[in-house]
Amino acid sequence: QVQLVESGGGLVQAGGSLRLSCAASGLTFRYTMGWFRQAPGKEREFVAAITSSGDSTVYADAVKGRFTISRDNAKNTVYLQMNSLRPEDTAVYYCAAGRWVPAGDLGYAGAYPYWGQGTQVTVSS
Image (cartoon, rainbow, N blue to C red; front, top):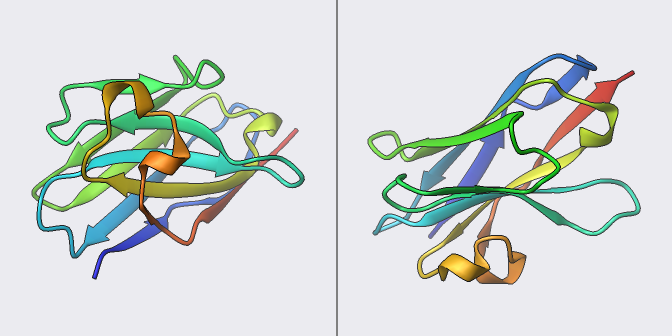
């Protein structure tokens, strides 16, 4: 049974930093991992993704240059380092895993069958 557990969310002032973690269990093979977020009243949107080997990453334009996705396969954990946070980054952040995710679908939520429960990130102005 695949389980993804996010942690590290919280309240931070604009300009601050947070590091989210996603601990994965029950994954037999290495999976492509993604981070998505959903703000109140908005649709879920892509944030970042990293391939199973960790040699390729993709970012949404809104977070490029501020957020960094990484993974430690020995610990089955994926991270999202978030710097220079803005109030518009406020959302519930979700970790997702997919076994076969084509390069062109890294930003597509439907390509990831496994999801965590989410962690709240609130950025105050």
